[in-house]
Amino acid sequence: MIAEIFTASTYGVDAFIVRTEVHVENGVFFFSIVGLPDSAVKESRERTISAIKNSMFHFPIKRYTVNLAPADVKKEGSGFDLPIAIGMLSETSQLFSKKIKEFLFIGELSLDGKLRPVPGILPIALEARRNGFKGIVLPQENASEAAIVGDVEVYPFEKLTDVVDFLQDERSFTPFKVDVKAMFEKEQNYHFDFADVKGQAEVKRAMEIAAAGSHNIILIGLPGSGKTMLAKRLPTILPPLTLDEALETTKIHSIAGLLPSGSSIISIRPFRSPHHTASDVSLVGGGPNAKPGEISFAHNGVLFLDELTEFKKNVLEVMRQPLEDRVVTISRSKLTVQYPCNFMLVAAMNPTPAGSQKETAMYSDPEVQKFLSKISGPILDRIDLHIHVNPVKYQELSSKAEGERSEQIRGRVIRARELQLKRFKGRKGLFANSNMSGKEIREFCAIDSACEELMKNAITRLGLSARAYDRILKVSRTIADLEGTKKLNTAHISEAIQYRSLDRTGWL
Ligand SMILES: Nc1ncnc2c1ncn2[C@@H]1O[C@H](COP(=O)(O)OP(=O)(O)O)[C@@H](O)[C@H]1O
Ligand SMILES: [Mg+2]
Image (cartoon, rainbow, N blue to C red; front, side):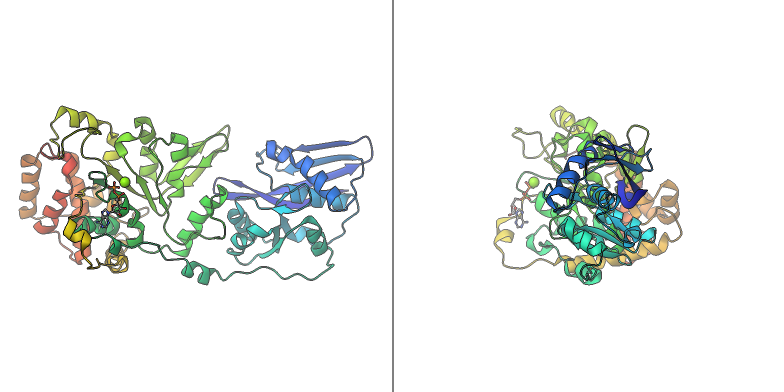
């Protein structure tokens, strides 16, 4: 006889069902795990043997063969301990249960038989539901993450003996449940607000435009001018996450074991701020286990690259394709995984090179040119708004007057986004003005001769580059959407022109 226990493993942001086959026969002691196990899976042998002994079960000296099927896909992690132990107990006639086939088992075992949490439970629970399993048996710490999925019963346990009691109906157990909607809504609050930022009316306006059209932005200002403070508040004015978006983002954090303890669903837009010394692997993902990187942890949220000029050029280069495609493809031997990475990029930089005495700089200054050339061209090419942040004046800082709250700004952003969704309905991959391609720009950003004249002047007199042209039109479209106006006018265009300072040849 062969015991057959179902479990699952993750692959990219998804999971697949794994059949754990355990065969025991008489003979000299032997224990082998086959089916492309990684080192954590191989160590299962030591953990399960010890856990079985310390849970007061017998461990007969026999020949044990464990096969993880499908055998041609690499298996990772320590979650196979529980299914292997269950298989060993039933093959050695210490566990009799008809329920085994209806459930999916996952969890690491400690040497004394306790169940320990494993990453990736959300995609695994989704896969259990998809395959029609009645339920999933897992460690307590993983319970609420699995219960989010619904339509699949969740039985969390503290130790191996409890699992056996459950399977043999020694005691009665009730499935673990969470009220996903209530949990999701309760946690949809940010800890900070745009009202905390004093003054800075122009900067806030520019950030509202960025949020409304999903435009990437760069904040240019001296240290202490409030760039980080402002960037952190961008998620608070974006439309609230939908439950689907929340699940997508949670899946990525789940497989990386990054969900904060006590929370099982990410209900606010993520804000990720990798340091400028970050490697390309930690930024875009990869490595031996093809893990997701910061750009995927920022999925449906904001990626903040502070001190953009300090990032290594090759690190920024690898972001180019994912920025365009909103998905990153990672290849490792034989297999390819894809992680979504649809984020808004906020970059920040000093206007002058570190150590420079100048408070403002001429773009034509060779020192400044060299400094700016450090920013990767392809990255700069994907940034629609350049926003200058001057330090807030003392009177404004000391003023008691409260600024506008994020909620009010968000209301306007949501209305502008609704207009865009309506306009782009039925067009795949197009959901905000920033995503428009050249063809769509011609279609939706038609301008009259007065606007044309203004653009011509901007390009010739201000020395704006040609690449600025399309970006100005896209941002103008968003400005008009915020206003609820169909046709672009010169006021929209001239405001958008202001946000292209890095293209100028004059003062930075
Ligand atoms: N407009 C402002 N309103 C209130 N506090 C501000 C403002 N600008 C800056 N600060 C204060 O100055 C600190 C430094 O700002 P920070 O965002 O770190 O600047 P930067 O990132 O540009 O170096 C903030 O934590 C905040 O306390
Ligand atoms: Mg800062």
